[in-house]
Length: 372
Image (cartoon, rainbow, N blue to C red; front, top):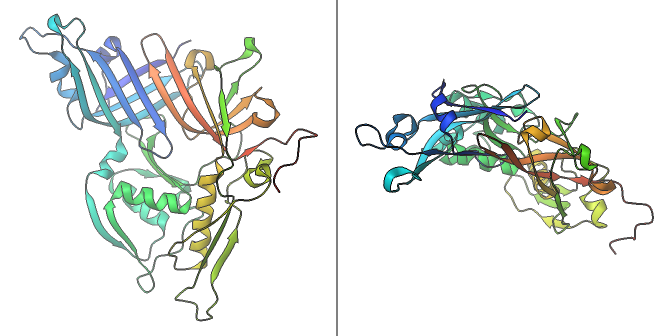
């Protein structure tokens, strides 16, 4: 069974667009706004106007949601966002005329106004949840896990000089979190995520490369690189500590669970150490920022491939954990789904994916030694 899909505008099914669709693209990404592009034909109305071009449902800031369902019966809300642009091609007779309607997810609402705002007596997670609430978003329950220290007006408050989306994206990167706004299965029910990647537990989907008669994906391109830090030195004198001793030190633990047996430093043979220069009000904050560097650099394995909903029997989503089978002892195992580009037509739902990993399998027996 190929996937079925629905286009909803302001919560109402647009069945006329479903049947006339030329193509639909949705790109989900865990560290960037998700985006969509809807391509529709253009025809002349009885009054001589162009129909989809002047359709108010496709105008600026119109709410568009896309849902899809595969053979497993689970409904997925791929995106719930807003129209931000149109590209129109008009031809004589309109036979090849078309309009491409583009937009982003609901995090766009958080990116429309730059603000100067002081945050005091809050943590990063509490600030994120407050902002999500101001836009009618439901905070993810994990947003307060492994939270920052409290920013106090007596020591160091937190200053915002950016849009709310830019502000949260900056906080997320320096604290090892992901900032996303998404819907899971029901358009209109949006979640605001400000949390570390969830990579524990059982995989959400199984991707099988071989044997050919059992494969549910196409070819894979897998790469690794060890030209990235696996240890961080972060030290700072604190205003609240009169001892004169620097807080912090060397750190080689990212705080994230390894997705297999061999992490970056072990696989590389020797650590690559970087010095982190940052401002922090306490030792906890300093450690958290060092871990954030290691989390980002720790995704040293990248896997790219493609599949389709009929072959996979499911919809692959960004932020999920995928199990890759039959890719060899080094590269089989669990991966974090970093992005998925959905390409949907009336006949097919293709998915191009990028997976990342912070570890590889155990080295084969007799492998040569590496490092000094």
